Length: 25
Image (cartoon, rainbow, N blue to C red; front, side):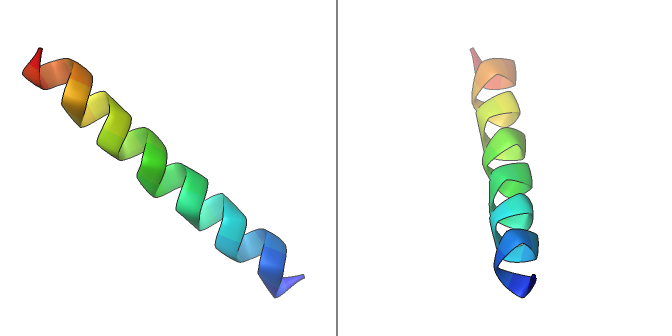
């Protein structure tokens, strides 16, 4: 399922962005 792969990659990048935001705070 390439769709699932896309979702996983999207969630991963989202987590990285969230962590970066927390680090800034």
